[in-house]
Image: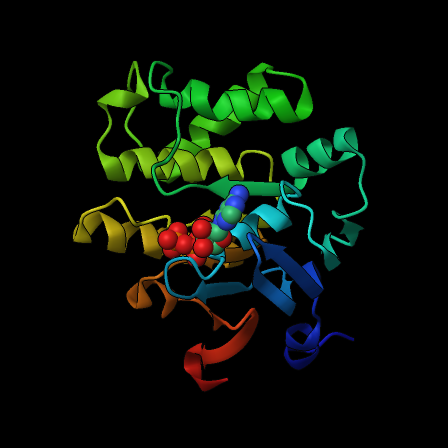
Length: 236
Ligand SMILES: Nc1ncnc2c1ncn2[C@@H]1O[C@H](COP(=O)(O)OP(=O)(O)OP(=O)(O)O)[C@@H](O)[C@H]1O
């Protein structure tokens, strides 16, 4: 019989990085870097500009092939996949939130979100539109003809809806609040760090902002090509 204690002990990794190494321009960016992220958990990776935070996300997305080590998303090795399967894994299992939202400005928020469903699943039926609208409503995005009419915070919430539409096991965010004012930053951060519990996904955020990182379950600092544990929320 499952007890609360057993439930807490159940750990389902959605991202596993082991022994990652990567050298670029004669500089060792990753030197045996490892990380494991479970469903329902959030990790913030901090580090100074140029330490390799965005490159780490590119490795997880399979956009960069590391020199050594492995990256697995929901148990599937990203490093060994052929391009077509990699694209499918990315579309179906990973949601990505960028610093500037990166929406298509002429499309409505709804169409921006639906497009992600179309690209991943090859269908854009009524159910997908309804689900997209429901997500946008949940995230407090107003209805608009074009997404360029939205405020920065609303655009970022649309980007979160787009990242969630395919029910990804893994959410990645690169400086997701970097372009926002302090009020929108706090609201967006609150929203983001609630997602792992709400949607049972893992959330990996890279940021140089310690106020954002402090909201994650764990904070890891990228230094000398590896990740050092710097904080665990709630003293765990
Ligand atoms: N194609 C490339 N050729 C040479 N060096 C590169 C290339 N791409 C990235 N780099 C270098 O790799 C390092 C890591 O870059 P990355 O963008 O991952 O850092 P970051 O920690 O995300 O920085 P920031 O916080 O400023 O966004 C930087 O020094 C960058 O100049």
